[in-house]
Length: 140
Image (cartoon, rainbow, N blue to C red; front, side):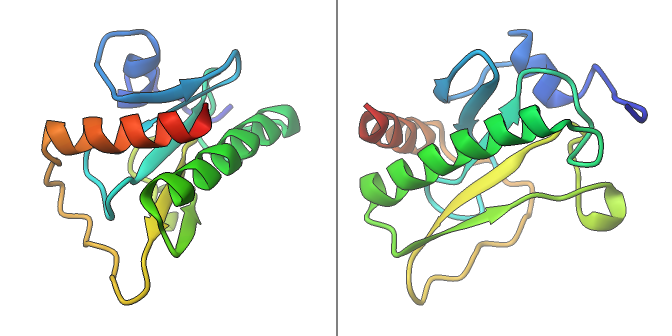
């Protein structure tokens, strides 16, 4: 594994050092709301084991992450009446990666509504809770 930083924000979330709005988790993955969403209901899926990105992950880890991402995508589309879903995954700085722990973005999309720019602006807590609750309920 190349230069995994155990102090990255997602590692801290996994250790319980930082809060998150958990949608679901299993023994291999965690899904939670992105606090700087590019669209309403924007979620993240991460593996529980350390991996800097796709280039460091093994097949079993990738399979678990994508399985959870698919489940969250189906639930988000249903819960939020989305027209579609964008799934994004970035690798290394040149590839657009900002947090160096493997993660997949699951972003609900609606016809005619562009993605918001990544400005670093945090969403209102009540919005994150509302979307988390809706997506989690659709998973049940």
